[in-house]
Image (tube, rainbow over all chains, first blue to last red; front, side):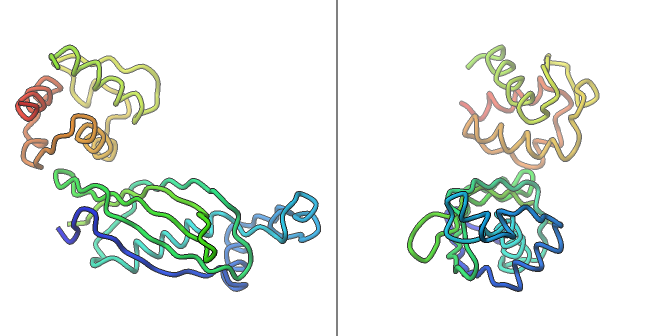
Length: 132
Length: 80
């Protein structure tokens, strides 16, 4: 087993224009909250709200690229969005090994995305399987 | 916790994970008797059962179970 209980992984992400446009193309989501600054402002936001699921893509990167093994597959992923993220914001990502289930080769992480002003952007749970 | 209480707890776990309505388990139930209990679901079930009962199984134990009754035997052994 490559993981230890309560072991913590950290990474920094940024929602750049490139990330935003790539996700927009991938999702084909043109909701004005994400694409129209005036619409977003009319709803009380200071700017276009970035797609929340960009953070799920960041989680995918974390699982696929930041762990000590490539023999992983995501079994489930939960996210709760707590505060909106805006263009070019940097996010501090932290994931803690919250459960190890060797009987089924499964590891669980609790994770959170913190904005650089300290505000929680999102948090959730990921369950991965370790490929034999 | 007695066997009946464990079965009731397992039924609640199965219903939550499988999410296809009420699940009724007996000592002789197997995966063939429960719609949606497949190998992937089994991973989720084991994780939640381990959490719920605060126990850990081994892969050998899981493979050895022939029915829910044998799963309960294993849970009782670990609950002490």
